[in-house]
Image 1: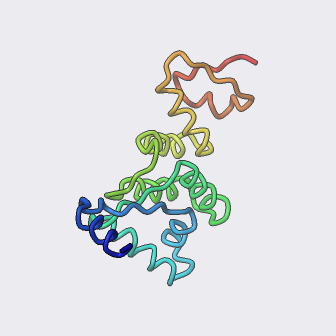
Image 2 (image 1 turned 135 degrees about the vertical axis):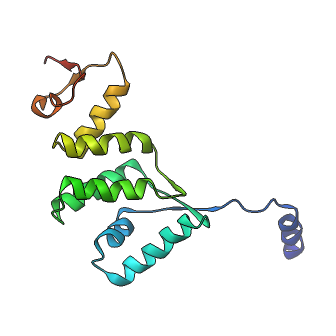
Length: 153
């Protein structure tokens, strides 16, 4: 009886939407660094299936920040190299990430102002939030962003 009910419910369902897959930091890193060729190839196939419209891949803001931090601190990539690779990720078809547009705004600031990525992200965030001041002890980096109102502590 269970199988019969299951078949009936399955027959009446709408087609499944495109499969969604959350991608963790290590998958991106294997793909970008090619330091484990088997895992890099498996990651490439996943991303190729997104480009082909077979799946939607998604990740979080923290994964993107972790990618930047790891590429910079562990792999020694330059800001320009990292920005290029992260831009490639963020502009992949069928790729979703919260605040993707804001991340794409932060990347040029990260390279042009030679600041930490998180600082560049926060500066881009604050530039959209007119009338909000920034309280920070890291005034050196944030002074590089015109238009930011720094709160005197």
